[in-house]
Amino acid sequence: MRAAADREETAWPGAAGGALLVVGDVATDVVARHTEPLTYGTDTTAEILTLPGGAGANAACWAAYSGCADVRLLGRVGAGGAEWHGTLLRDSGVRPTLIPDEEAPTATIVALVDAKAERTFLTDGGAALRLCPADWSAGLLDGVAGLHLSGYLFFSGPSRELAGLALADALERGVPVSVDPASAGFIAAMGVDRFLTAAAGAAVLLPNADEAGLLTGLPDPADAAAELSRHVPLAVVTLGAGGALVAESGAVTARVAPVPATAVDSTGAGDAFTGAFLAALLSGASPVDAASAGCRAGAHAVTVRGGRPPGSTGTRP
Figure 1 (cartoon, rainbow, N blue to C red):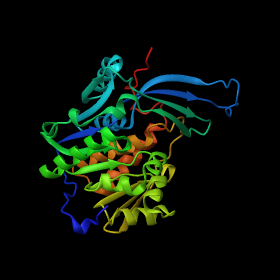
Figure 2 (spheres, rainbow, N blue to C red):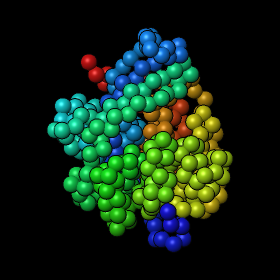
Figure 3 (cartoon, one colour):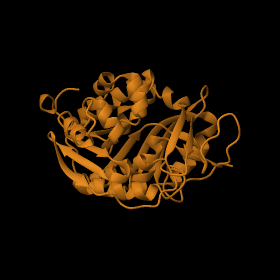
Figure 4 (spheres, rainbow, N blue to C red):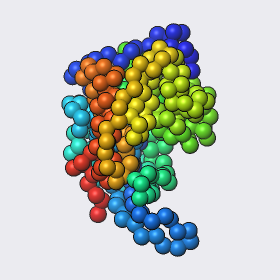
């Protein structure tokens, strides 16, 4: 990733009334909450729900829930699930453009949630990984004040190419871009340098502490946040129950306090932070105030099942 001083980038402006376009994954989540440790080779009792999910779709829903009046989403889903997912997104205040895939099913994620509300994912990218350049049009940026790219886009060839086109078109129009790195495991498999090169040009990077540490090789989250902000104008590192760090120009400029919450399911908490953060930033809030809004949304998210805001889960029959 090139240093910020070596490239002309658009810092994220306050743009009240501008739309947020999210490009990313739409998924079906199978959330299994178990209060006892998994017993290998036999049964473990669990409460199981099938819910709408996907990091990109979740973030879009939380942005709308947090007050962004115009939230748009581009994603690819299995043809059989397009109507269900589209209806739930619209009901959540999101304007979806969903590409139906006749050959691959909607991405499916099995989320194993333990008694401490920590989640472990089993992920089948399905149609989400088949989002491709043919699905993109620069016209999707009409009226858009901010573009958000889900990090899952970068982990497959076709969707990574689309992400590159979207990022380039956004920068050409002066639309700032944010990226959520999404998965330390997938970044490690892809390679840090490849990921950073693919995301070069972003104005905002939103990793969690594990992702920030992996991307920089620095174990301390504050050091990692500071290092990342030498390469992007704004780096915001989420710390789960520890709040968040805001870093700019090579230094941590704020430590945002966590919001206490009684967690039942941490699925989607980072997506909630991202959605609320971007909604606040687009309304003209400072990065610190936007991060505070993100922490409030993240705390709210862990009190509900699944990754979507209350009232928008639409449990699948």
